[in-house]
Structures are given as C-alpha cells and as structure tokens.
Image (cartoon, rainbow, N blue to C red; front, side):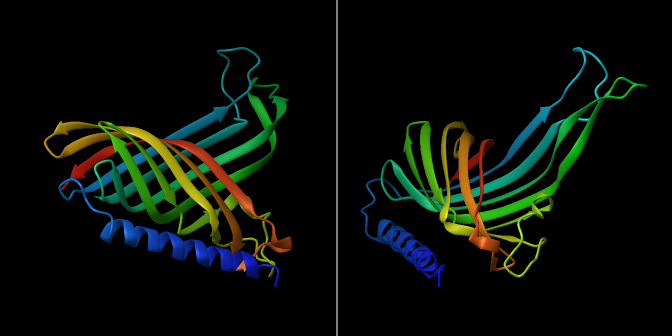
Amino acid sequence: MKNQPLENGERIMKSTIIVCLVIMVFVVPVRTQESWSVDAGFTFSHFQQQVKAEIGDARGERLVNELQVGIMALGTYRVWKYVSVGVFLQFDRGNRHAARFSGFDPGTGKTVTKDEIGGDYDEFWAGPMMRIQWKELFGEFGYGLFGSRNDDARSDLKSSTGDSIGTLTLMPSVAFYASLGGAFTVWESLDLVIRMEYRLRYYNKREGNPFQANIEHGTQNFTPFIGVRFRL
C-alpha cells in the first residue's frame, strides 16, 4: 500500500500532460503557417581522471574513465509563432569505470588502482516535449513518459524479489530534460542544431519490481548535442 499514492500520482501526471498536449495541438490557434520539423543528431561525452608521479610519465590505470555516445530524435509541430510541441526519443550507450589509487608499479612506474567498479550501460527514454524559439535561439522542456536502463555497475541495487541484474524502470514522476540551443539555417529548410541538454531522472524498479526498501536511484547529466533540423 505504500506505493499506491505514488502510482496514482504518476497516472495523474501522465494523463494531465497528454490532455495538455491535445489541447495545445487542436485548440490553440496557430498564428503562423503550419510548420512541422524533425531534429536528428548525436551526443557524445568523455571523462577521465588519472594520477601520475609527474606530468608526461607513462599512463597507467585510470581512476575514472567514462565514454558515452547517444542518438536523439525530436518531432515537433508549431502551435504558435514561438511555441512548438512534439515528442522526443533518446538512446544512449556507454562504458564507465571508477577505482581508487593504489600506488605505482615498481617496474614500470605506471599507476595502479584497486576496488574498481563499473561496466557497460544503455538507456532509452521518450516522451512529450515543448520548444520555445526566438529567431535562432530556443529552449526546450521534455518529460520522460517512458524509459528503461541496463547498467552492469548497479548490481548493488536489488529488487524486492532479490534480482541484482535486469532492466531498471523509469520513475515518471521525476524524469525530465531541459535544453538551450541554437538552430542556424545552412540550406533552405535544413538547419544546423546545437544544444546543451540537462537530464534528471529516477529509477525505482528492476524488472518491474520495486527496489528493496523502496529506495530510488537518481541520474543526472549535462550533455552537448549536435545535429540537423528538417523544416517541413
């Protein structure tokens, strides 16, 4: 019974957002010519930390190493001169490892680490979004209506049935992205799009079962995006 209010709140939030989108698309008067657009592009991030006795020494094991690539697609419909609504899809795949510094190898002088954790991960999420645009600049806000994550490093988050592997389920009550960017025309109806995206989302289930003790797992990140926009 503890999760019933949360589940009811998630259903209410989903229903409210869907109703608002329907009202905006079919009721709000369009003050400019109908305009559809499709964005497609990729994201990339790479983060490292390391220790050396001196700068320029041979590199050993890294303390932290994370590499992530992703693809993102958005489809929008302009409902007003400055406002568009639509949906977004995003898929990320990456690998990360973190460890503690243990010293230097006596033979090579390279860094040695211990207590390493990490592994591969992938994440998919999708939902409705809204864009406010003025000339070349725009801001966006999206809501993660659906989402899942597989993460080899998070075997420590067990479900209520004891599972330590399997897909994590998005908690829709806290799952959104916000971004700022610019779209610059390069050829008639084709724009170059650059945006900086902030994402915050929580997961509260594994393979459909709540985490033990009903804990919640949060993830957030800033990610650059570069791609193109087709205006139809």
